[in-house]
Image 1 (tube, helix red, strand yellow):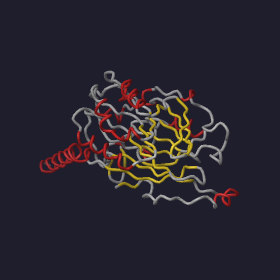
Image 2 (spheres, one colour):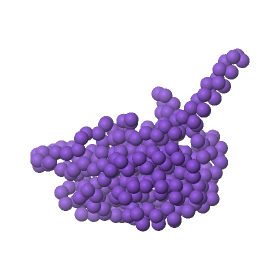
Image 3 (spheres, one colour):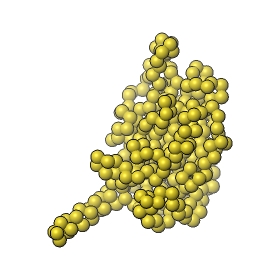
Image 4 (cartoon, helix red, strand yellow):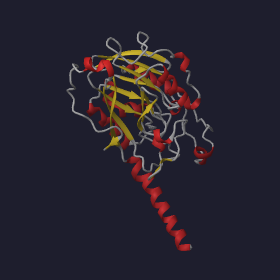
Length: 328
């Protein structure tokens, strides 16, 4: 019995050491191909970054994020929780670096507004609605810097961007995790001139943004005809068990959607980033490497009477990406 207990304690210590020292610094780039563009559109490359949780001294994460600029995405989408320290704004800007010169849109999360505080880990399992908000963070400074570099704040706003020569309709909400969302402020058809999926003359893509993928928000985007919603917050579960997946999501979405691409309803796709950082009070990842995502957006397949017309659309000039949900 003593030997069994000792062996279990040793295994637990090894697992904790791996999760805190190795995996949380083992950054990766996830690739996914999502058929969400209107037929005949050229593919778009979108870099999805989320949950940096940066603070001074995190040089390894800084270098990884800075290196993402080499991907030269058509659009950068940041779904929040950039900060973990009141002096982290310069750290975030330094990490994003040349990505700030690319077209970009963003919404914020709770950890842009409030700093981290020590929490009982059991609350994630047994009291998921329990909220402990830390001290105020300089989110206004971060927002001003993003806007100065040309990024667009999509919070409770409807935007239309031209990216790589193609129209994108964008709308976002403030963080539902702390009840800041007000979907009514952006409610209505994503393309007011078209009640159905995007067609010729409409936007190439209708894109929704939210930090936390709460079902009430996702249902709103789906009802209004959005093609794709990008979110973060879940950290992919942060701790994932082999054969089981995420233990919790820390929001209302089910565990199967804790990270990566999935469907939400008949038309809309959802992509949830597992994020790049952790709270300084829970600096572990297990079975869930920190990640950014390069999304290759391609035209939807056309069925029925429209298929013949779409057959004449120009073929993609880009090489195919890895299958949805793959990582390397």
